[in-house]
Image (cartoon, rainbow over all chains, first blue to last red; front, side, top):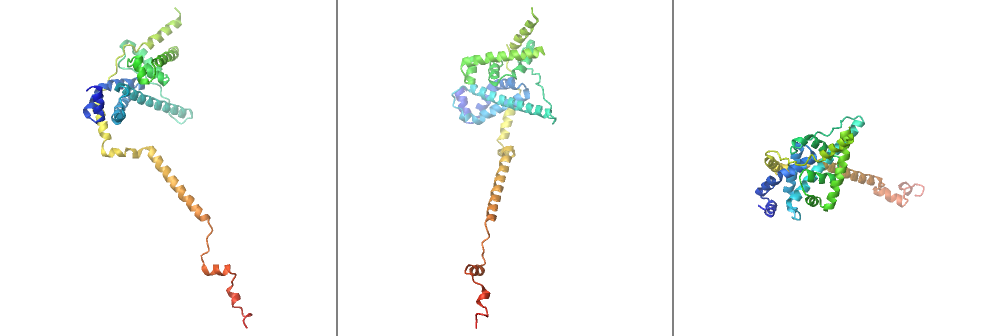
Length: 187
Length: 110
């Protein structure tokens, strides 16, 4: 099935079309989500959520963007929502700890992305840790380019921005990452 | 070579550590588990999943509160109004300044 036929099939509730959608895009969705949430169990749940949302809302998909662009947007939204909830929980735990109501602050866990080359494992873990501190738009741009290997044009399409804006986000992301890594390495 | 340069080099190497990264693959049986989850959502009882949601409980509580306040307000409004006299003959006599005893006074009747 080509993309148009796939979308038509999905909108008609065709089970074969849905299976093809999942089999074609599951690794892309999973990798995108994993690179943000940095936890394999959570990434699998969220990746499933992405496909469930596609299943439930494909009728509203008008095809103004590519299917992959739409999938990236849903995956990034789900992953960043999960991150926001985790941060809110951490802040609450920190506050509870401060007022003596219990609840310990949980440190970010060392994340080992399975696709990183062996020689780079340790450095990549530091980089992923630093990425959690980036503002969201910078984090999206950096993740899509570095972890998913997208071009600036493709990232611009996903983020609904111009290419120059994406270049600016990448530049600022790297500056912020350098500052964070400096702190980590000087600690 | 200044010691700071080593850290800067390390930082740059770290920034490039994702070069050559390959995509992480979804776990085995991902589709099977996804399909099982979808099938469960489409079960008949699943349509009541919203019943247990906190938002539903809060909305129900708010509705009960509003109904009780409305009922209480109505009740209090009614009890503020004065009780009307319904005893017919006493009301008539009072209005026309009539007194049963004065009508039948022996002094006036020869």
